Structures are given as C-alpha cells and as structure tokens.
Image: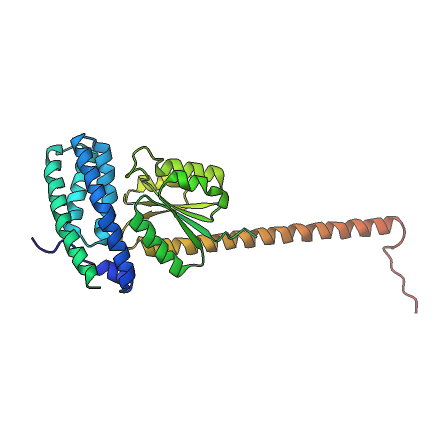
Length: 115
Length: 174
C-alpha cells in the first residue's frame, strides 16, 4: 500500500515548527483511534445519523494529516449514511478506512520521531 | 464607542482544529483565546462576554447527548446579543449557512485547509465593523449635542429679545 499520510499542509501551516507539528500529530494519534472505535460501535448498532456525524467530523482531521485516501472512505460513509443508500457498502468502507488509518498511524509516529 | 472586547471563544469537539485555530489566531491577533469542547461549557462561561465565538455546527459528534451548534448559537445570542458568532462546519451548503445567519451568526466558515486564514479575516472584519459602529454612534451623539446647543441659542436669543435686552435694530454710538 502506498503512503497514507502527508504532512505537507502541517509543515506549511506551522512554518516547519517541529513542536507544533508533533503536538497536532500526537493529538490526532490520541483522538483518531477513539473516533474509529466509536464509528465501529455505531455501525454495529446501525446508528446511521451518529455514524454520519462521526465520519463528517473525522474528515477535516484526515485532511490536515494529508490522508486523502482515508478521507475519501469517510466521505463515502458520510454520503451513504446521509442518503441512506448503499448501506451494505459501509462495513467495507469502514474496514478500508481503518486499514488506511493503521498504516498512517505508523507513518506519522515515524515522521514525528525524526522531526 | 462600541466595546471592543478582546476575548475569543473557540467551541469545537475536534480538539485538533480548535488548537490549530487558537495557535493561528494567537499569532495574528491580540485577543485572549479560550477553547471549549462543548456548547454547555461555553454557555457557562458567557458571563466573560467574549467579543467573538467560533462555534462548530456539529458539537455532538463525540457525545451525541451534547448540545448541537444551532442550539448553542441561539443560547449565546440570547445571553449576549453583542457577541459575534462565527459558525464552523464541514458542510459547504448554502442553506446551512443561511440558516445559521437567520439565527444571528455573523459569518460561516467551511472547515478546510484555508479555514484558518478565513477565520483571521473574519476577526479583522468584525473588529472593523465594531469600530465603524463605534464611530457612527459617536457622530450620532455629536449631531444630537450640536442640535441641542443650536436650539438653546435660539431660545436664548428669543428670550433676550422678548425681555428687551436686545433689539432688532442695533444702534451704534460713535
């Protein structure tokens, strides 16, 4: 699988301030797994409105971490939950999102270790 | 002059966005900035009368029982009508933006990479708007005072004339 994250935006936003990049990435590494777990729970409970809001809220964080692939899965989940269409695709989208995020977590940890 | 309150509240249950927005605005403005993760916490702190509140549209993404952004907007405007509320949302939908404006939001920012720069611009616009409001109020007061002074002079002249202390035909003695 190709690289799942890209810190170009954060580098530009912080003007290459290593402390700030680490702060934001660590906040993401702390909050994203919890958000992902919440989405899995919502899927199990077929809580579509809740899952839509969770996917929607996750999008901006994924964008800041340059995780465009994962962002597309979150957009797909949000759209399906919003329109209540192709609901059968949501488990697969969530699995792909989870896989992409797992890889990105490793990448991000490695990147901030080198800052 | 309008009170240019130097306090900004950021209300968002996304801790990363809130922190990034705070860091950006701290660099760009002289406002004191506070972060709240829920609408309820922000409402409790409204006694501090912030000048600006950046408010997330979906405040209940982490806790579904929490107050949502629209409820918080209504409550903030009820408690402090002078506070300018700027809505933050990932939804690029005009009807959502219009709805928030109808409930008194000053502006609407779509979350994204450019949202921090937009927020900075909105703070500047609000500052300029408040300053203009203050100037308008100052000129209104000046006009009222000038009008009152003019009326007083006219009344004085009429009274002096009626009491014979001045006449219409001034005479000059050489």
